[in-house]
Every structure is written in C-alpha cells, then in structure tokens.
Image 1 (cartoon, helix red, strand yellow):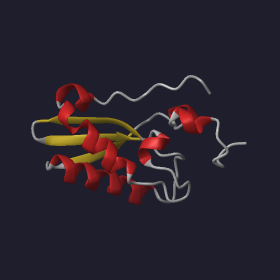
Image 2 (image 1 turned 90 degrees about the vertical axis):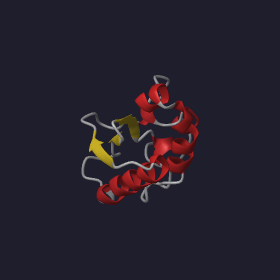
Image 3 (image 1 turned 90 degrees about the horizontal axis):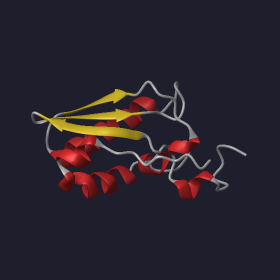
Length: 114
C-alpha cells in the first residue's frame, strides 16, 4: 500500500493558521468501531472556509457505517468549534480505502485487513 497521498485541504491554502488546530481537534475524534482517529484513517478529505461558512468533505470507512451519523456530527461540531463559523458536512462519493490512512498504519496489524 504505497500509493498514500496526504490530503490537501483547501483551508490550508486560504487560512493556513487553522491547520494545526483542525488537525489536533479532528485527531481527538475516533471511529468507535475501529478505534483510530479521523485523521489517522484519512476520513476528512477536505475543509473549505468561504464567506464565513465552513464545509467538511468526509468519507466513512463503509457506506452504511452504523456510527456514520454520530461521526458526521462530531466532525461538524469540532470544525465549527475551532473555526467559530457555521459548518456543514458533505459525504464524499469516493469509497474509503486503506491507502487513505496514515502510512505508518497501513502495514500494521491494526485489525481491519489481514
């Protein structure tokens, strides 16, 4: 699994001062079934900030994740808290793959894949 591409959020270009706070805050949110953070799993695909509104583009590890609604709301609330602007979450049409994960975890025995 060497095709890892780190996510480049639009907000990193337009408002780079928020990068560390967003990364830290979203690292504190975990997928309840897997036990890894949203950042480790690569679930946050993009964050934009325009006209005093933020939008998070997110992917879930499975299309019908039973914790999906809770995870989406947790991401929305965290970004809204950090940026202090109304925030929405859109689900990405791409499917999650292990290549989206932190490269240090891709070859580990963390349990999702043999």
